[in-house]
Amino acid sequence: MPRPARSWLSAAVSAGYLPCLERLTRTMASPECCYPAPLVERAPLVLWLLHGRGLAVLALHGEERQAAALMVTAVKATAGLAGGDVCRETALQQFADIPGALVARAFETVGVQEEDGEQRQEPALQREQQAKLLRLLSLCIARWLPRYAALLPGAWNAAGPGRKDKAGPGAHALLLRSGRRMVRLAGLARGAAEGRGDARAAESWGRLLATCGGIAAAKGGQGQADGVAGKQEEASGEQDGRDLTALAALLPPPCDVAVLPACRNPLCCNLERDSEAGLQLVACGGRCGDNGCSGEGPCCCRMCLDVKRAWHRLAT
Image 1 (cartoon, one colour):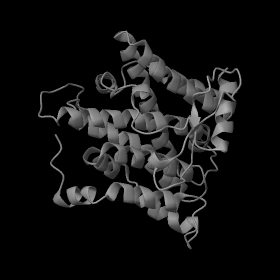
Image 2 (cartoon, helix red, strand yellow):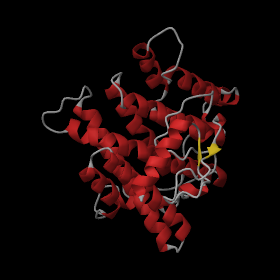
Image 3 (cartoon, one colour):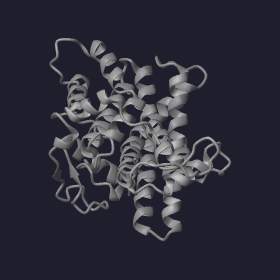
Image 4 (cartoon, helix red, strand yellow):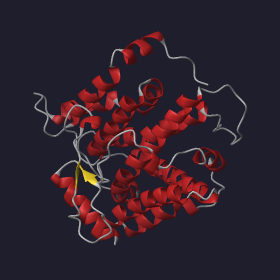
């Protein structure tokens, strides 16, 4: 069980530190930011604020909706910078660290031990705090994996011989390692849902994994897409296999995590407004055509609607 929050952290969270940090991040990371400094000068500050382990601590002690909004904003901001030319190596590292930090916090707080894969009887947080952390982890994985899949082809190429990418090989190796682990966790969660006969949860996890593979394929990395979609079938001899299996059995599926309104574009990068919770979503009205879209999927802007429509065509 983690130590109680320090007095300064409790005071900061109570005073509204999470929404303040999210608003600052969205303002500084947005391409439309009118701040008088260019992005190359703003980006290091944004990444300094979004350290994965610090976000995990804030998520644990903050109000759930505020923590979820900050987490999604952090994923969007770091992924956006990782896909550009400004501070790319640091951005890749920060992006890769976000879900891993939550997983590490989950190992500490819900009785799943990362060191030896055994679940020990130790004091735990209150039941609702545990449930909150697991919901935030599920939400983070659902928002993080599609962005990882979009970055995947470039990471494979840049990590290999003759790379021309500005980011170092260490950053790409970290991204690939973190991505494999999160894909495996999602796949194990799907398997756990199938094992207990929860078809709705299994479908939700399966849909997320299929989205990742489809995005990677659309980016021109069919081999990488096969790797993403197939990681959940890897042998359980991985170093953290037993640990992830125990954690996956506790994760709620993305379809049951409704803390925030979600744009149906899996690659949404909208940083408008002060908070992710403030995005205004509108139904597509069935304009995706007869490609499996029933018209209920909300999007936050015209660009996301177009991407969502293209994704439905690809998926079918």
